[in-house]
Image (tube, helix red, strand yellow):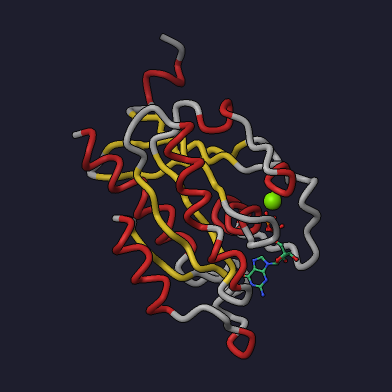
Length: 177
Ligand code: GDP
Ligand code: MG
Protein backbone atom coordinates (compact mmCIF):
# COMPACT_ATOMS: atom_id res chain seq x y z
CA UNK A 1 0.00 0.00 0.00
CA UNK A 2 1.05 3.55 -0.62
CA UNK A 3 0.86 6.01 2.22
CA UNK A 4 -2.28 7.49 0.72
CA UNK A 5 -4.15 4.23 0.50
CA UNK A 6 -3.54 3.52 4.16
CA UNK A 7 -5.22 6.71 5.31
CA UNK A 8 -8.27 6.67 3.05
CA UNK A 9 -11.17 4.47 3.98
CA UNK A 10 -13.48 5.05 1.05
CA UNK A 11 -13.44 6.57 -2.42
CA UNK A 12 -16.79 7.51 -3.94
CA UNK A 13 -17.14 8.65 -7.52
CA UNK A 14 -19.94 11.20 -7.89
CA UNK A 15 -21.03 12.77 -11.19
CA UNK A 16 -22.63 16.13 -11.93
CA UNK A 17 -25.15 16.10 -14.77
CA UNK A 18 -27.86 18.35 -16.17
CA UNK A 19 -28.28 20.90 -18.95
CA UNK A 20 -25.62 23.40 -19.89
CA UNK A 21 -25.32 26.57 -17.73
CA UNK A 22 -27.42 25.33 -14.81
CA UNK A 23 -24.43 25.86 -12.50
CA UNK A 24 -22.80 22.43 -12.23
CA UNK A 25 -19.23 23.74 -12.41
CA UNK A 26 -19.96 26.53 -9.94
CA UNK A 27 -21.58 24.15 -7.46
CA UNK A 28 -18.36 22.15 -7.55
CA UNK A 29 -16.04 25.15 -7.31
CA UNK A 30 -18.14 26.57 -4.46
CA UNK A 31 -18.00 23.26 -2.59
CA UNK A 32 -14.37 22.36 -3.27
CA UNK A 33 -12.70 25.78 -3.14
CA UNK A 34 -15.39 28.23 -1.98
CA UNK A 35 -15.11 30.01 -5.33
CA UNK A 36 -17.80 31.37 -7.63
CA UNK A 37 -17.35 32.55 -11.21
CA UNK A 38 -19.98 35.06 -12.40
CA UNK A 39 -19.18 34.48 -16.07
CA UNK A 40 -17.82 30.98 -16.16
CA UNK A 41 -17.15 29.44 -19.54
CA UNK A 42 -18.49 25.95 -19.87
CA UNK A 43 -15.43 24.85 -21.79
CA UNK A 44 -13.20 25.44 -18.78
CA UNK A 45 -13.39 22.62 -16.35
CA UNK A 46 -11.34 20.11 -14.49
CA UNK A 47 -12.12 16.46 -14.92
CA UNK A 48 -12.82 15.97 -11.23
CA UNK A 49 -12.14 17.40 -7.78
CA UNK A 50 -11.49 15.29 -4.75
CA UNK A 51 -12.86 16.38 -1.39
CA UNK A 52 -12.26 14.68 1.93
CA UNK A 53 -15.35 14.25 4.06
CA UNK A 54 -15.48 12.61 7.48
CA UNK A 55 -18.46 10.48 8.46
CA UNK A 56 -18.60 8.47 11.69
CA UNK A 57 -14.86 8.90 12.09
CA UNK A 58 -14.21 7.43 8.65
CA UNK A 59 -12.41 9.43 6.03
CA UNK A 60 -14.23 9.49 2.73
CA UNK A 61 -12.78 10.81 -0.48
CA UNK A 62 -15.52 12.18 -2.69
CA UNK A 63 -14.25 12.27 -6.26
CA UNK A 64 -16.67 14.66 -7.94
CA UNK A 65 -16.72 14.67 -11.73
CA UNK A 66 -17.69 17.68 -13.81
CA UNK A 67 -18.34 17.83 -17.53
CA UNK A 68 -16.23 20.05 -19.76
CA UNK A 69 -19.33 21.39 -21.49
CA UNK A 70 -19.99 18.30 -23.63
CA UNK A 71 -23.58 18.15 -22.30
CA UNK A 72 -24.35 20.91 -24.84
CA UNK A 73 -23.81 18.33 -27.56
CA UNK A 74 -25.54 15.51 -25.72
CA UNK A 75 -22.19 13.76 -25.84
CA UNK A 76 -21.45 12.86 -22.26
CA UNK A 77 -19.66 9.55 -22.65
CA UNK A 78 -20.13 6.31 -20.78
CA UNK A 79 -16.62 6.74 -19.34
CA UNK A 80 -17.97 9.73 -17.46
CA UNK A 81 -20.55 7.57 -15.68
CA UNK A 82 -18.42 4.47 -15.22
CA UNK A 83 -18.05 3.46 -11.59
CA UNK A 84 -20.20 6.31 -10.28
CA UNK A 85 -21.98 5.59 -7.01
CA UNK A 86 -23.56 9.02 -6.66
CA UNK A 87 -25.05 11.69 -8.93
CA UNK A 88 -26.30 15.24 -8.67
CA UNK A 89 -28.83 16.03 -11.41
CA UNK A 90 -28.98 19.80 -11.61
CA UNK A 91 -31.54 22.18 -13.12
CA UNK A 92 -31.85 25.96 -12.97
CA UNK A 93 -34.96 27.15 -11.08
CA UNK A 94 -35.04 30.20 -13.38
CA UNK A 95 -35.20 28.15 -16.62
CA UNK A 96 -38.05 25.70 -16.94
CA UNK A 97 -36.51 23.97 -19.95
CA UNK A 98 -33.69 22.71 -17.73
CA UNK A 99 -36.27 21.18 -15.37
CA UNK A 100 -38.17 19.59 -18.27
CA UNK A 101 -35.00 17.76 -19.31
CA UNK A 102 -34.49 16.05 -15.94
CA UNK A 103 -36.15 12.79 -16.96
CA UNK A 104 -33.88 12.56 -19.98
CA UNK A 105 -30.82 12.94 -17.74
CA UNK A 106 -32.22 10.36 -15.38
CA UNK A 107 -32.63 7.91 -18.26
CA UNK A 108 -29.11 8.66 -19.43
CA UNK A 109 -27.78 7.98 -15.92
CA UNK A 110 -29.71 4.72 -15.64
CA UNK A 111 -28.55 3.59 -19.08
CA UNK A 112 -24.89 4.22 -18.40
CA UNK A 113 -24.49 3.16 -14.81
CA UNK A 114 -24.22 -0.44 -13.82
CA UNK A 115 -25.43 -0.09 -10.24
CA UNK A 116 -27.93 1.81 -8.16
CA UNK A 117 -26.57 5.31 -8.08
CA UNK A 118 -27.54 7.50 -5.13
CA UNK A 119 -29.12 10.47 -6.88
CA UNK A 120 -30.11 13.90 -5.66
CA UNK A 121 -32.16 16.35 -7.71
CA UNK A 122 -30.82 19.89 -7.36
CA UNK A 123 -32.72 23.08 -8.20
CA UNK A 124 -29.91 25.64 -8.41
CA UNK A 125 -29.91 29.48 -8.55
CA UNK A 126 -32.45 30.10 -5.77
CA UNK A 127 -30.91 33.57 -5.38
CA UNK A 128 -32.70 34.59 -8.62
CA UNK A 129 -35.94 35.14 -6.70
CA UNK A 130 -37.69 37.31 -9.29
CA UNK A 131 -36.74 35.04 -12.16
CA UNK A 132 -38.03 31.78 -10.71
CA UNK A 133 -39.87 29.54 -13.21
CA UNK A 134 -39.92 26.26 -11.26
CA UNK A 135 -41.46 26.16 -7.78
CA UNK A 136 -40.02 24.25 -4.84
CA UNK A 137 -43.14 22.05 -4.82
CA UNK A 138 -42.64 21.02 -8.46
CA UNK A 139 -39.08 19.98 -7.70
CA UNK A 140 -40.17 18.06 -4.62
CA UNK A 141 -42.96 16.31 -6.49
CA UNK A 142 -40.69 15.18 -9.31
CA UNK A 143 -38.07 13.96 -6.83
CA UNK A 144 -40.66 11.95 -4.90
CA UNK A 145 -42.06 10.42 -8.08
CA UNK A 146 -38.58 9.35 -9.19
CA UNK A 147 -37.33 8.30 -5.76
CA UNK A 148 -34.63 10.97 -5.57
CA UNK A 149 -33.34 13.15 -2.80
CA UNK A 150 -34.07 16.83 -3.37
CA UNK A 151 -32.54 20.17 -2.42
CA UNK A 152 -32.55 23.70 -3.78
CA UNK A 153 -29.19 25.47 -3.83
CA UNK A 154 -27.41 28.62 -4.80
CA UNK A 155 -23.79 28.40 -5.86
CA UNK A 156 -23.80 32.21 -5.80
CA UNK A 157 -24.82 32.68 -2.14
CA UNK A 158 -23.63 29.18 -1.07
CA UNK A 159 -26.95 28.06 0.36
CA UNK A 160 -27.29 24.27 0.68
CA UNK A 161 -24.21 23.61 -1.50
CA UNK A 162 -22.22 21.66 1.10
CA UNK A 163 -25.42 19.98 2.32
CA UNK A 164 -26.14 18.71 -1.19
CA UNK A 165 -22.77 16.97 -1.54
CA UNK A 166 -22.81 15.74 2.05
CA UNK A 167 -26.29 14.25 1.61
CA UNK A 168 -25.10 12.14 -1.32
CA UNK A 169 -21.93 11.02 0.43
CA UNK A 170 -23.76 10.18 3.65
CA UNK A 171 -26.36 8.10 1.80
CA UNK A 172 -23.75 6.18 -0.21
CA UNK A 173 -21.94 5.51 3.05
CA UNK A 174 -25.17 4.27 4.69
CA UNK A 175 -25.83 1.88 1.82
CA UNK A 176 -22.32 0.47 1.81
CA UNK A 177 -22.03 -0.07 5.54
P1 GDP B 1 -22.63 24.52 -16.05
O1 GDP B 1 -22.61 24.70 -17.53
O2 GDP B 1 -23.83 23.73 -15.61
O3 GDP B 1 -21.35 24.00 -15.49
O4 GDP B 1 -22.88 25.98 -15.41
P2 GDP B 1 -21.79 27.02 -14.82
O5 GDP B 1 -21.36 26.61 -13.46
O6 GDP B 1 -20.73 27.25 -15.84
O7 GDP B 1 -22.72 28.31 -14.65
C1 GDP B 1 -23.35 28.92 -15.77
C2 GDP B 1 -23.66 30.37 -15.44
O8 GDP B 1 -24.59 30.44 -14.35
C3 GDP B 1 -22.42 31.16 -15.00
O9 GDP B 1 -22.52 32.47 -15.50
C4 GDP B 1 -22.53 31.17 -13.49
O10 GDP B 1 -21.94 32.29 -12.90
C5 GDP B 1 -24.05 31.17 -13.28
N1 GDP B 1 -24.45 30.53 -12.02
C6 GDP B 1 -24.08 29.31 -11.54
N2 GDP B 1 -24.66 29.05 -10.37
C7 GDP B 1 -25.40 30.12 -10.07
C8 GDP B 1 -26.27 30.47 -8.96
O11 GDP B 1 -26.47 29.72 -7.99
N3 GDP B 1 -26.90 31.69 -9.03
C9 GDP B 1 -26.74 32.54 -10.08
N4 GDP B 1 -27.39 33.70 -10.03
N5 GDP B 1 -25.94 32.25 -11.12
C10 GDP B 1 -25.29 31.06 -11.12
MG1 MG C 1 -19.70 23.30 -16.52
